[in-house]
Length: 163
Image 1: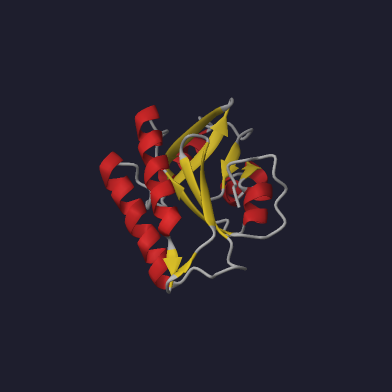
Image 2: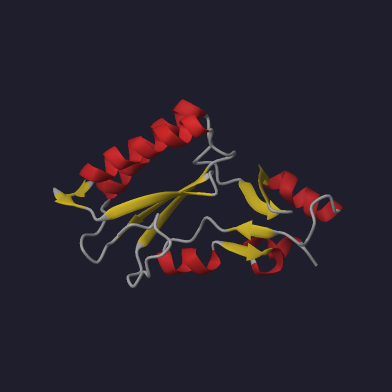
């Protein structure tokens, strides 16, 4: 399973875990994050059994980890181990990977991230266009990630904030 190659047609519905950063990664950060995740995923296991997994960095700001749970399910301990690596990355670069009180969206082709309260205020006051696309980090299956990770505002979770 290599989700970083967009030419592959996925047939399994892998488990997806998305870690959204509050800002884009620098080239150095992206390189180090990639190296840490390749090293970690190469040895990632659940109850001593290797996990078939991969990752990609989406839009230079979101880390997407996939696990083929048809081969071996990720357990609580293995998910905790992944969380530990992600916390290290988060602390090293101040990325707010675990802060779920933010909204990321695409406006005029640019990915932007705001605190949720500022996002709602911008929509209400009209400083953020309603012609945006919004990211949904709650997707936990790969097929849903492919189809609904980025949606027009009114079809997204944030559609409740507009008329």
